Length: 336
Image 1 (tube, helix red, strand yellow):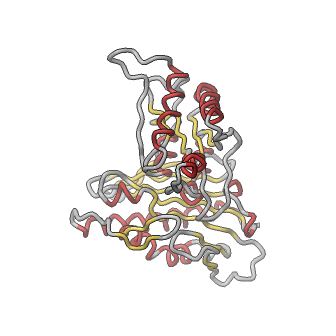
Image 2 (spheres, rainbow, N blue to C red):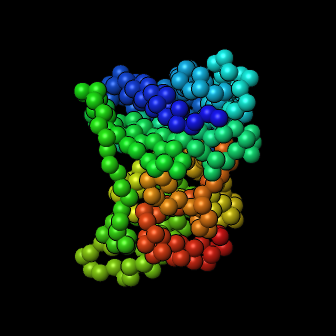
Image 3 (cartoon, rainbow, N blue to C red):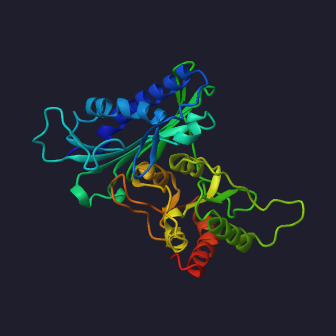
């Protein structure tokens, strides 16, 4: 039996190398946005900055993880079935699947607006039956802006809790970091949001958001703000905000509005995919409650193609306040 903990240090090294490569590319760009379209795939548009993350992906994961056990590496830019990697252990009975998003948060990073993340989840290989629920080790490493000298990284093994540290790019030192989801009992005066990053039924998603907030907190008072929102275009970043106690509720419902768009003769745009949630185990081990919109624990195919809707709650009190209102809003629109 291979102890999944054996993957943690090699995984963190691989993610750190990807982080450093991407930051170096941004520095070399000298303020020029790396926003040229490199490839327009069916599932997403890849920009020049994405190519930086892809270039060393196979090399790094083969070097760091494949010596431990045979792996199937899955990521954008690779064949849908993944790439099989082994280092003298091809006959080993136990293999693993590794799901990676080399740069989650491309759009914010390429314009140097906001940090992005390297995301990875590792699961025992059950072939096409493997799901996000099988992940036993996960990690996420922050790709900082050029002007930012600190970078967080978080990791977890299933059942063993989450850990974090903060890396200083100037000194090369890493220090332990304590992160804790919000213990607030309400979304009042905190950050809570329904994701609506891109055009396509945004008014419906905004209406759902409004119904939740008004249902939870009542009418807005003149000159006051009930709560706030942060449209961080990065699933790994959203999970980090929940883990760090910055956000109290996040919902990404984009796949659910497909029927509305279809009735309008429109197509569903870009959605969250499983690789965007590759590090979800870290959030759960840190105490964040991550579910599907219907309230069951989050799960999804272990691939790069499926559209995924998810919700995250900082604690059970926030969930009790928000989840019934969310589900009512979805049911009224026949979206749940």
